[in-house]
Image (cartoon, rainbow, N blue to C red; front, side, top):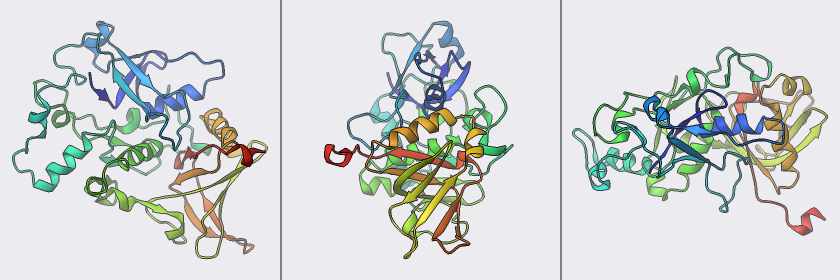
Length: 322
């Protein structure tokens, strides 16, 4: 059975992406019981078709030891014939060019099929903002259930990626996971990938991610990223980038009140605590940059904690922890 982008979580009572499932799970108070996932198809749920969540119970890390978090269908469970979890047709059929498709488009489509969860459309706009990024509703971290454009429901045996439609999200962390997964492709395939950004149009995926050293003061209109270290200040924290912007250091400060207002603060606090054991942490952000008024470098300003995503780096060596 194939992998897919979403599953129905029995405990949360809604469909979730694997990234949203991780946030929900790691926001629970320990000890935690693993979630039960079922198929996204309601008919299959009546058949008790279970789905396995892989590595959603650990924080995102830059490591080759763990597979990227994803959902996987259980091969022994029965699904209805029209279910999107069933791969219809042979791999040769899925690789055939389609009417009106250019050679480059066909190559990009085939590259996307190698990935568990590729994001086609990203909306960076924050809606219904509250301090820290909380939103009302059960499991309500995402607009329209993660804002995913699910496309048409399957009604024939045509290939899954044709009828499901483009995948859309408002979730920065999910976009980051998609980008990091895509980076595992050969460079020539990665460079074919595009992303439709609301308000910006279709652009190469690689151009929507910019290293902090190449950023500019003000709004950058893309995801900024870079490695750094975290320091806790009570309930708040700061993040200092290792690389500089010109000759100036770049830092983020999140005050305690912003953390306290964030629905997934337990998830974020646990990740920050674990960062003490890492050589560095990579921050991805949609924030903007301002000159520090006291002349102390550059400040990264983040209005909403939905605008940041952390990925833990490699663990410290015994020498570094001594």
